[in-house]
Image (cartoon, one colour):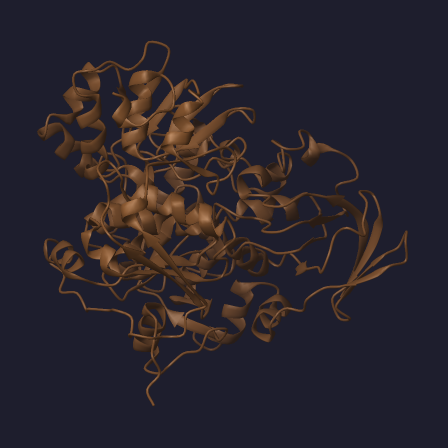
Length: 167
Length: 421
């Protein structure tokens, strides 16, 4: 799988409260949540043009804090293609896998500027900065997780591999 | 030679009937699957979207309405209604509506719904609270809960364990909150990512159950999968009071830990975690020097809304008045805690000292309702997170502390310890 888009850059410890603030959790509709994505650190982000089709690039511990799946859902709902970070907090990681939001750990983020167009190649395990032509490594996910991702998320996996024939 | 196991490895081995290795991926039957009024609606929607009609095992599901309850607006009322109807349709008996329950992580142990050795998955990050009972209790997302609805199972990666060795005795006023804030300031907000914090050492047996719940509760603030305590006399007593005959799960003498950290409780002072990370803890001596003025104090939450917490707050507030420019909100963690506090005369103390008593709810902790703060306001809270915008305006500030520090700060109007009263 290859994804290309312009990057938005975020720092370390981007917690789920800033990805989608608690006050907006009165709904679970992805499109509505998307409007308030990153509202408290980048007001208006979820409503601005250019977010759709973009890629997020962040530092350490992305998605820490609350287990709210509304966080990856808001990102997915905003039309963001994937999230690359130096590391992910564990519940965010499993939520992204479970709902089929592509994510990957990237070796470094210093070689990118906001607005750069990048191409993420999940098969080759690499990300290319199309402006500077530099290439960086991304870590590939364990086999079991890839199987969930390939199924299109955890519930598809359950239907295909656990409940198949049981219904 | 038999493998020496951590508490987590023992729980998993017991479930599978074989040894496990860190890094291994497992499919496991869960003992308890939990959801609330924010996370369950999404799980229900996904369950139905993927063809679910009847939940796999209604007796293993617990649903609690606690975040936006009593409902703050039409949308939150719709969410609660959805969960309420689902519980009824599916014959889920462990459904707790307002007035009959409380904050999930105060409520479930209190009701005897968690046993040592259980595998608990909850669509709420603070599910790790139940580690205090020697359960493997892990916070997950809504899709994971939908998976439990569909097939009763969850996927887990066997985690590595960090051992926290507690030695010595706690000083006066110092409690579980100070222990966990100190640990967070040592290991950082991702210091235990994908790992388990396992508590041990001589110091453990002197730590009350309520303080253990507080410590396990905030394990997730270090990124941990859970924070687990060994089952000892205190756990057994707690279980027996609730009609549970517990299995005694303790770690082997020398399992393979990823890291070991020793904390001497004799040296531990009251802690205050500064905005905007729970790991930014300072000793009270240092924090008090700054005389940081406080607009609001919140005492409650799944972290510190239990009897020990309210008793501590009341002992400090008794006979005093909250500083005239400060507001103090007290939130008993459950209906039972509320009733017990009433019987012990604590509610009277709170009302007389100008505190407002909220019904059991997560409320202001996540900036939901019942104490949302304005721009520039500063808060001392016994809750668990002080992130940007967590309790309201993105330019408000939250200082995390124990009920002792919160109550003392409420009286003085600035951050201080009970020694200043």
